[in-house]
Length: 331
Length: 257
View 1 (cartoon, chains in turn purple, red):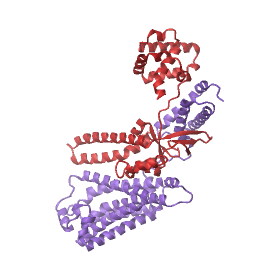
View 2 (tube, helix red, strand yellow):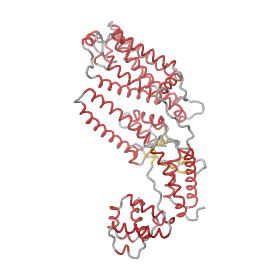
View 3 (cartoon, rainbow over the protein chains, first blue to last red):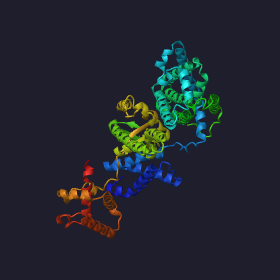
């Protein structure tokens, strides 16, 4: 019972100020870890402030004091009532293992995305075989619309098509591909259909280009051009689509008694792990495409480029399939 | 967590004590976003000008750095500020807004990353149309990114410890009849002086009587040096009453807002 509100406020003010100061410390330094005695003090102060608010609410109407205490409780609620163990964050060494583990746990979704890509590639390939004119419809890149043999001859005459602009080209590739992969992932929120359509369309482009160059007898150039960066870039786009389908699955399919919020909560770590990995892969692919893929024979033998691309692909598959599980719990 | 007023969420502590948090309206969020985007544009401009000078050394490197810098700034600005500034970007900070976990737990990095990656979808087809319209009709004003990340944006206006009743309920204050003096006082008095005055008034009961008289006398003399008060405002008024009047005049406008 509060007999005199002013005196009560005056008496309790040091406690409230101590609580406010502790909260300010926590808010200013997100990495701050309180010692056990400080944690106990935080809990005590939180409960004291909650109790004081309850007393003020029950005996009198003092809106400023109520608002002040409510604002303190709102700030401190998360720190006191969060029962989750605080993650120390993944080390650089363990984060890739976590990525592989997440990949394996959602392998079916990857296969679905891969099937969509293959379907698109088959469609694109058949379409170009039947009517080479469809290239103009499918391919958004003007330099790929002409005769493949002419392009190969031209590319082999010069050292590199991006000579002197490699860094700019790499930066453009990285940023563009990361934007596309983020879009591919978030489109999963609309049921996953658009994600699959995006992958299918990429498959159409890939199939059309491949068949066009193979029919023109430029298979070695094609493999030497695409494999070094494509062996990382294409899987990366598929991983982002996979993240999109993880979202779509959480949205569309019930999992026991979990609510939609609960389902999203459960897959948050998976999606962030996948998309973070994708960003790393795409940065690497951008560097390779700009500084390696654009150099052709006689500057760089196709055999070297093809071997590099194949080695990279095999290493990626081995990493995804056989890397040991991390000791940490999956995100 | 229950909801009564659409802008208000009731939270209940483990002991059953309830308190409220206030949701930010889509309009205030839009203004905060506008400020953030202007800030990003400004920093990008500075970045472009600074890196353009580097083009004298290498045009290629300068262009690459501009592209990467602008991209990283637009992607990481929201993530880093929300992660390291307690859920507040600079725009949100100016408008007194904050991102929190929808269950009022600590905000995690995966929540921050996800809600910000979803801006790509929220901004479709142009200037946050999808996210904006969605949040207008959402009971908790969440945009798509908030729904997936399970986050809320709330209003956190700065709440200072309330002033003593003697100030807030003050009926007689001779300073009120001298608006020019009050105006001068408001112009001259710094936030630090106001804080000092507030704390002295708030803690006066805990002071030793002789120290109390001494302190208020010194403070009264200090303020009378800072502002020239008409004699009728200071004569026959105790130092403590004079300072209570000062505090009332300095905080009245703010209280009445």
